Amino acid sequence: MEIDLALIWSLLIAFAVLAYVLLDGFDLGIGILFPIFNKGSERDYAMNTIAPVWDGNETWLVLGGGGLFAVFPLAYSVVLPALYAPLTLMLLGLIFRGVAFEYRWRSKNSQGFWDLAFFGGSLAAAFCQGIALGALVQGIDVVDRAYAGGWWNWLTPFSLLTGVSVAVGYILLGSTWLILKTVGPVQEKAYRYAKPALFGLLGLIGLVSIWTPFLNPEFLARWFTMPQIIYTAPVPLLVLVTALVLLRGLREKNDAWPFFASLGLFVLTYVGLGISFFPYMVPPSLTIWQAAAPDVSLEFLLIGTAVLIPLILGYTAYAYWVFRGKVDPKEGYH
Image (cartoon, rainbow, N blue to C red; front, side, top):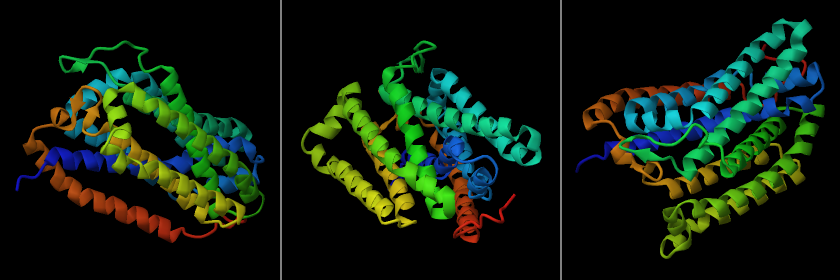
């Protein structure tokens, strides 16, 4: 039986992107929430919850971007010029956030500036990730295997909506992470902001879900024609069930349920996105197989990745295991 290497690699890239969104999402969410915490001890406490893991979480972004370049070079060459502006702003935001993370501990006189940089970098990165996603979903113009659109094609009402959606989703992840990892005033504030973030995200998911099928006839057929609707209908139903579990966890002050239910919401929306996308790597023009590198390259890279991904998963799981449980507000990792 012949192995479909392009399909395997598309699943690996999709997994890397999902891992990045889930793991770095709550980091960015805490950055966006930073202004609600009092200067000093509360902000220190919130930041200490992610200090041991935040840089490791970004490994998945490198794997996803690097993998796209190596394995789907045609898709990379089309997507990059189409999304130069939001991707550049995203990277600048991540740089600012990373620098602020280190400098705010060492420069007490300018800590307010670095707190603002941490907030601004996190918000910019989250918003631009959503814009890039929306621009990709709405379609990229391709002619003769090259990007044929303009400089501002990525900036549309739909991409702005997805930008806001991702930012609000990260706020939900960040607040539920703090519920899981903190106690006292920081946890109380996280509880207070998690519920409106949940309702806001559900509303935005609804708007994006209604809008997306009308961007592309194939998207519409996937979700609203028989027999496809039989397979796609469980996704929105599971989203509703997961949201109810999250809401119940918030009401009952169950520290663990909200965070894991938030992760579940992201996984389900990602599955819904995959249902619309497949088999395209760059809708509506390039499929997975059209964008893939030669099989010889895919096979060679897969050998190294088969070693690399278990190592990344192993040290990530170990880090989270070592730093499991609540963070002591009187101590910290810095």
